[in-house]
Image (cartoon, rainbow, N blue to C red; front, top):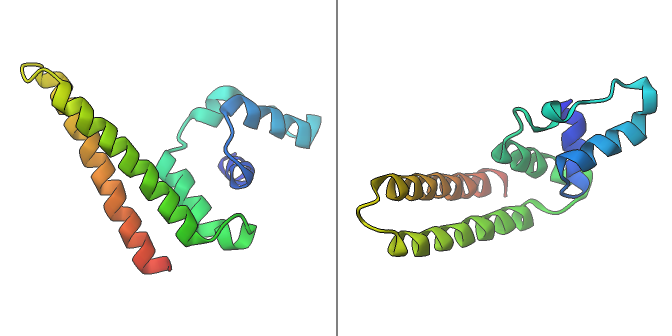
Length: 122
């Protein structure tokens, strides 16, 4: 199921219901109809991005540097939003501050990983 979903996502972004519909239209009754839980279960953003990055030259979708830069811009935009949110969050609200800090640390790890991908693949 995962490879079929990634093949569809290599063309363009899609929501789970759109992916389900595309699979049903493509395979008809020859392939068991996926339930929506199969589509959303276990598919992580990083996995999707990395598969797209790894397979981009084969699919002719985009060059790897373009994909890395687009993902980097997305992470940086999210980081800016979180930084702004952190400055306006009540200092006494430890839960909210920890949540924001955790999200920022994950984004920083993603940015570091993108740098590593660039070094290895470009």
